Structures are given as structure tokens and as C-alpha cells.
Length: 301
Image 1: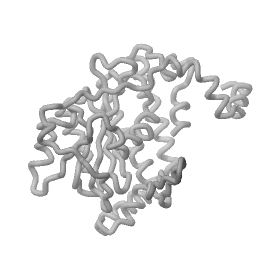
Image 2: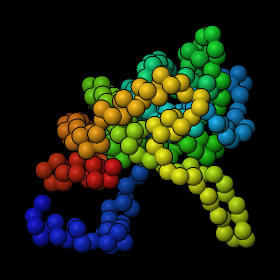
Image 3: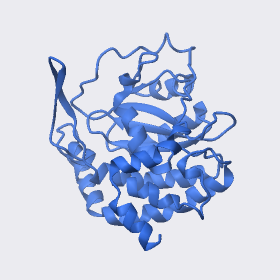
Image 4: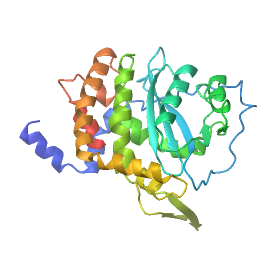
């Protein structure tokens, strides 16, 4: 960008940036809910009534994110997010049209790469999860996986994965429509080889330990920030062989190298997405020559 514009960008405050962007954000619908109730299995899959205060890895929450732009019409790419409640270990996979077969395929691929076994699986009431394909996948094994669902219209029941939809999906791919099916494999390679190692090995987070109300104020107490990898290394339920593999994998990675790989891999994906989709009114929908979208996203991440 020109030097004068660069000086203005570096000197702008957060409040002033919000004021300048307010007219553009006002006309933009930030994401749409694509959950369609799956009513056939609601009586077979129990509702999770506790908070899953687990002390060992293996209990997952899952959710989907629609890359639909401003319209849910037609077919497009969805991201499926899986989050381990204990460690925060998060993986993502892109699927086409969130069909049951695609979600099972994504779940199988994720499970093969997880550093722990799946003990429990919790999801919302969407038809992409509440189907016989996924039920059979978890049920037809020697050690069955506990399959539960959240209460309808209670997003906080899946709060662990809901917050990851922003940090692991929207901050990376934004809100534009991804309607090119060939992008699915490229996005999955980006998730699997770059984005997930960066977050799971190098990005710490704090877990809420307690929440007490004192009159009108709520006092929250968090633990010491740790990466998902560090939480697994500190767990007595993870085998020494798995811990050794985690240490070797982390030693072979470097966060700045991953960031450079991310920039190189993300640019062609977003450029192809912008060319293949009609304008949706979001900040990333402007022509590529007018506003470079890559810097906007990678700076946030």
C-alpha cells in the first residue's frame, strides 16, 4: 500500500476503525444458520444433561459452519469442526453439501489422525449428525462411543466447539461463498497440514475453572494458558508413546514457517473463491485488485 495509507493504518485506533467500518458492517449478514433438524433419531440419541467436566481427552464436540455467503440456496462447501473438551485439540474438515456420507468420511479421517481415542461424541440436532450413517460408525465397534446431542436451541450446550468456529474457521476463510467443489481438497490440505498444527502445537488458551457471582458482578477464574499439545503431554491418560510422538512432531514444526506456508496456500484459495462466487456484500467480496484479502485474514490470525 502507499506509504501515506500505511502510516494511517498503523496509527488508527481500534475505536476509530470500528467507526469507519460501521456503515459497511451494517449491511452485511455475518453468517447464516444452516442447521436443519434431524428428527428421526432424536429418541435414540440421548440429550447430554451434564457439562462434561471431563478429566481425560477423547470427548469431542462437533459442529458445522456454512460457507454460503448471504444465501443458503444451492450447494457449497461446509466446514466440520471437532474439538476435544479436555485439551482443546481442534481439527477441521471441509465437506461438500454436508451430506451424511461426507460427514462420516470427514469424521473417519479426523479420528485416524487424533492423538487419542474417541470416547464420546456430542453434537447439535442437525441432520448432518443425527443420521444412521454416523450412528452406525460409532456403534459398530468393540468399544462403542457415547453418542449424545445438545438441547434444541441451546448453543451454549456445545460452547467448546462453538467458539472454535470463529477462531479456526471464520478467521481463516471469512464469510464468502465457497461454491467450487474442487476447493474442498485444497482447504482440507490447508486445515490438516498447516492450520491445525499451528493452533494445536503453538496457540495457548486458558480454561475456565470457576465462575462465582458477587452481587451484580461475576468473577471468573481461569487456569494457566497452555496449548492443546501441552495439555495432552500433562495428561496421565495419554501413553508415553503418544507423548513422544507429539514432542517429535512439535520439534519438527516452526510457527513462522507455518505462517509463511499459510499465506502461500490461502491466497490461491481465496482468489478462486472470489472468481467463482457472486458478490455477497462482505468485506472479502471486493475485486482482488481493489482490496487484497489475504493480508486482512492473515493479520487477524
